[in-house]
Length: 300
Image 1 (tube, rainbow, N blue to C red):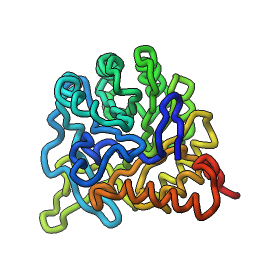
Image 2 (cartoon, rainbow, N blue to C red; image 1 turned 45 degrees about the horizontal axis):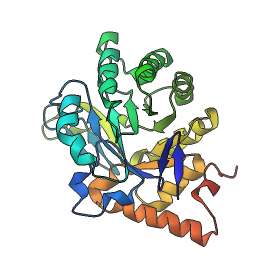
Image 3 (tube, rainbow, N blue to C red; image 1 turned 120 degrees about the vertical axis):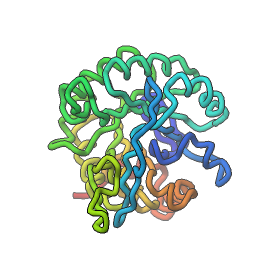
Image 4 (cartoon, one colour; image 1 turned 90 degrees about the vertical axis):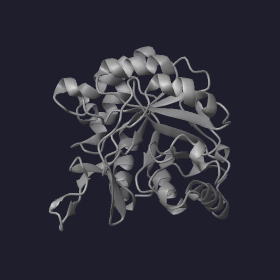
């Protein structure tokens, strides 16, 4: 079950998606988090963020919308208060890093680079870039290249870049970040959606639109993972609507070297453990020696 994402060796290919698993400690009462290949903690920014006004989550058919807005205490709070707690885990802990400007990304990553027990970051390039009129870094090759290059200059460990699906051709963005020094890409982030309350005739979310996640986005995520894995040479981490082991195995066949579980954690806290077990059963029943035997093995 072991996989390697650049220099990051995982005991198994099942990770948790940022924003859906807190800081890991929230799940300690349910199971031993060290059974996971790794946990990707809640998004961290250079400055503290209060997030968006409520309501900022809404259920939809086969999914959910969220507009939390990266609420967190900032990188200094993370280092002082959370890092000592996370250091107790034997599994790999990865920090999701977000920012509004390139300078914020760099300043945040410079501090994280010094943390001995954090061996990788996931760079979220789907956040608004205020200096470019609200455009997300991840929706153009040039802006993606700029932020990834700037972070690569100061970050010396494994750099995973999380891609936005809200683009015309995700393979072009993937190739741009690969050329800028990314060690891996994760995809997809949420799709842009909205919900309306017909009784009040107002948007359900305070921000009007939000990020759609859950089973509804799986076919889109699977298609994009397949396309990107054929377009670049660095490892691909797949996510988007993975609810069980069968879903996860589809992503491996499409070319993902590892997967992340997100929305399913809200429904059943034990989903990740069940997926690990299900993958092992599939490999054994089909007489595969390793997870590597099925990665990218889709028959066309």
